[in-house]
Image (cartoon, rainbow over all chains, first blue to last red; front, side, top):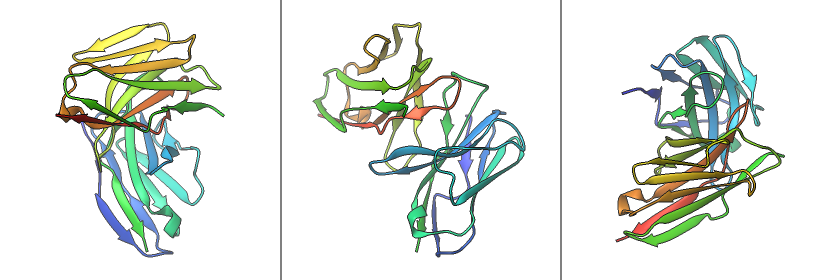
Length: 113
Length: 110
C-alpha cells in the first residue's frame, strides 16, 4: 500500500522554537506539497516541490521554509513558531505535471503555546 | 482570484438516498476536477478525477459530472450509507497546483 508518512500525529511546541515537520513518500513521486488546514479556511498551500532541491512558494509561505534533499523526503520548517501557526499540517505527493490525484499523509496537529 | 466554492457546508440525508454535492469554480477554467474524502483528524483521500472534455465519470456508487457551461461539478453518492459520512473536498487544477474548496460535510442517517 503506497504511503505518505508524516513523522508526528501530534506536536506541542513553545513560541519561538524552531520546528521540523517531516514527510516521506514511498511512491517515487516527483511532486510534494505542504498544506495547512484550518476550520473555515480549508486547505492552504504553503510550499511545494517538483523535484529534488527545488522549492516553490505557495499561497502562505511567510514564516515557513522547506527542504527537499532527497526525492522521497520533504521537510517543513517553522523558523520561529508562533501561536498563529497552530494548525493541522498535511503533506501530499503526486506524479508528474498534472492530472493525478494527490496522496496525503495523516497530518500533524501542531499546537504552539 | 481563482476559487473553488462548495456552497453547502453540510448536507444531511437518509440512508439509501442519493447524496448530491456541488462544486463551482470562478475566475479560471480548470482542466480537471478532483474529489476527495476526508474523515475527522485524517488526511484527504483521492476518490475521482474528471477532465474538462469528460461529461461524466463513475466509480462504483460514485458519479461525478463536469459542466463547463455552468462552471460546475456535481458529485453523487447513490444508495448512501452511514459509512459515507465524511467531508468531501472538490479541487480544480490546470497546469499548476490544485485549488481546493472548503468541503461539504455529509451526514447519512440510518
